[in-house]
Image (cartoon, rainbow, N blue to C red; front, side, top):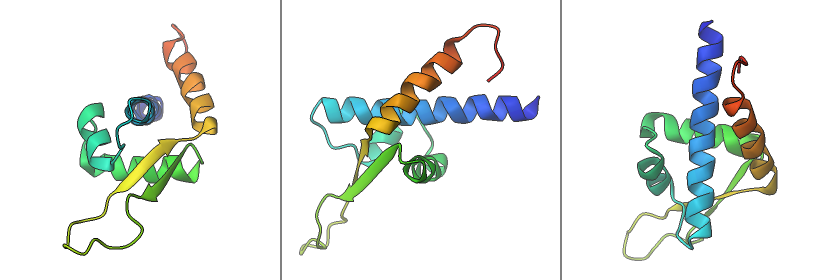
Length: 104
């Protein structure tokens, strides 16, 4: 039972991160890790581990906002994007999480 609970929680977190990232991109906003975490309500302790898994599954990609370090010492940010494969995963996760009476 614990494994099912953990899987559902992980699926909900994956879904929240990808939906938030996709919505930010659609609105023309930069989907940085910080912004995704704040908007999705995912703790930063879990966020970057989740993003790493989503990138390994090829559901998300990332790139540096600026290729070179900024001359004034400001921190560079990674910008995240949901892939087409990730959008397919969103649809599948939505179906799985919304089907009543099934174990996820």
